[in-house]
Image (cartoon, rainbow, N blue to C red; front, side):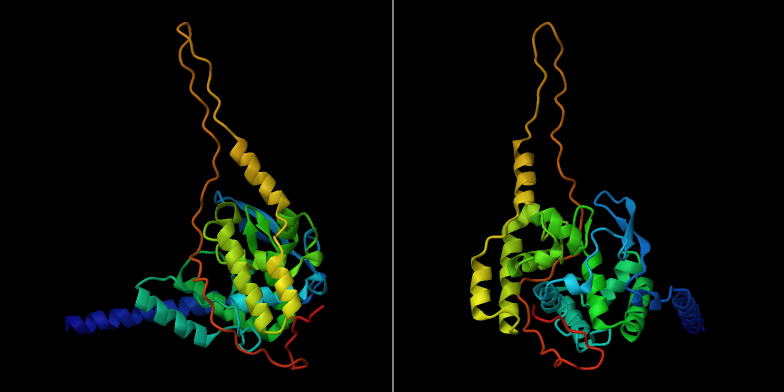
Length: 315
């Protein structure tokens, strides 16, 4: 009798939660508004100290880069590295989810995610970063709706303009200026791969301040994918590999931090020892676990002209 009561209570709780999910999904904002490339909206983004700041999504953001001004190599770098089946799925990559579950069970951890680019746009634009089942349901629902309402090209444009690339550095427009001192439209294949390489964990794992070598190695892997898929010719690939990213602004910041030294107050028998001011250090925040650098070969993308598939074109 007691077991039956427990089962009934469990079913009741599941029914209540299901009802809550349905209501939550119904209250989500419409995604159709994102179709208008001329409109802007304000969202909240979090800095590395946990504080929220307003961030403009759209052309009113002075760092916004329209899809037509984003180099093809930049678009393909994130697609091949982050979501190889982007042009085949409809917002959710079931195969990737199965592989992630299998991997996590083998590793006995939640080390690998399976979010598509569309899911990441849904999360970054409409949702918080809290890791809950409810938020995941919302993310999946919004991703499916976005695939129904928006073109693939528009989704990529939104993704590249809201991704986090550094301390309060959001979007490739800001990222390109922050690291290379140049507009995103002039990014080279190596620079595009460099920015894409940071995406799994710009705060810790792929933070170029701390792990520049790791970022460069992952960018080499992305360049290899670009060559394999025919985005780069053999000559362009070799040239990109030989190029050393001109991270002048980054190097200046690193040099400046190295030159900072502790300053001690003069001490004598006539004066009490002064407390030396602490050297200012960067506060390290915990980012999401970065995937392994070894990537599976991306699936073939659909041919040009396929309905609804607005693919990046080689410039």
